[in-house]
Image 1 (tube, one colour):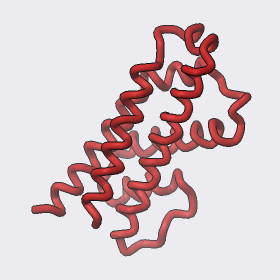
Image 2: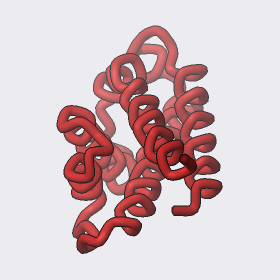
Image 3: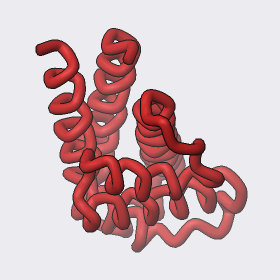
Image 4: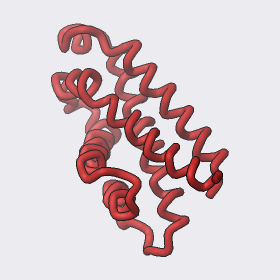
Length: 141
């Protein structure tokens, strides 16, 4: 396992989450009115999801099983490997769904959902990072 690579990706994840927190605003109306805020939040949430997917792929590549067929499936595999709880794996799969909408159908974004994500789901990224750091620390022992 390339621990340095994983740590770099976790630091990038931390920065993305922090950027979202800094720009999320207090209300859906704040978000709906401010296109710059929309772009900053959407890009950083998309990056955060992609970083989690990349980290998951890296960890899975160390396992003997077949690679996942989809981005979301990677989180199931991490659950099977004992890295993530079932709940966190499911939430991160939902984040992949958000990423797909953000990347492929940006104009149809539901800013109420985005606002909810920015206020209620950012800890999912922190929990993922902590779980990955636990794996990295165990490898270093």
